[in-house]
Image 1 (cartoon, rainbow, N blue to C red):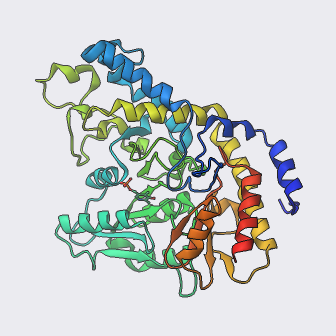
Image 2: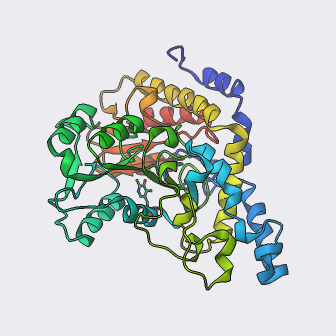
Length: 421
Ligand SMILES: *Cc1c(COP(=O)(O)O)cnc(C)c1O
């Protein structure tokens, strides 16, 4: 990967040789008010809209208009089992078996539902371990679970912190925490790809470590799903959750995903919150039966899901399915490696990439720390037509997404940044 070159010619050459280049055409790329196409590096926050999404949603709107309630069984894609159209491709995207995944609720809600089943505190083992700079919603969720079970949320929360002067968490520090407090920790819950630094954790290693000490292990893969090869099944994790509006391009606030490892698929003794959609599908509509727990991740559903949102997710997953997560990942490494190369070529001491330089320890996002910068830099970058996002105090997060970003996008971004610095 070190044979990158500077200059726009090289960027164009990379685009010409990119087997996935044509997929950019399948997305709506936002424009500024003068009609100029923006450089969109914010797929880590809200992924772009596939041009096919409208058709998928329109199909369901038409069937609803024409069929009313009959659409549950008579729609072209019957709504009763609509979520099943997504199962195979979602399983592929996150590296799971079909029985292990379901699309339902929203992300933080799923995190809570998973904790209902997999956070089983006792008097002596009740703590929850998270990474110190976890996404706020995750931190609030685990704190509230601690309080819900009658524990003090300060005492019960164990933080895996980066060392002073560093941004990335180290595994030896996690091992030390587990050695000291492992038998008091009920649940290890880590962001699979950290939203701030872009660090992609070794899910298998963390799971093994947690299990060695008798803890349950779960991951929030909001920044991992559609971005990296998660291999959730092989990781051995007990559960995982993710959203579909970031790298999975399914629209603002769209439904979320959940993974429950196969080993729990038929366990009817787990604590759960249930609803009619958790009930055995064959007898769900008899309505008067005793509750009969549905097996697999689907058994965690409560309600009949919003079909319009599922349709948008299906449109997006069909694109992922057509390419395959492995091929996407190959381009992603090339694209982000090129971005890193150009940033390093700037030779500017004011900027530092805090994301790991090892391609196996990151996805497409690079988090760039800019010395003495404030939000004005982000604003100027936006005015220059580059959409990124800013995290206080001094970090710009840029995510060149292999589905719709080009090497030229990356080249132009670095040129604009150079001018602004
Ligand atoms: C984006 C994100 C969220 C957002 O949660 P919602 O419930 O979808 O609003 C939560 N956690 C992480 C790690 C995220 O990246």
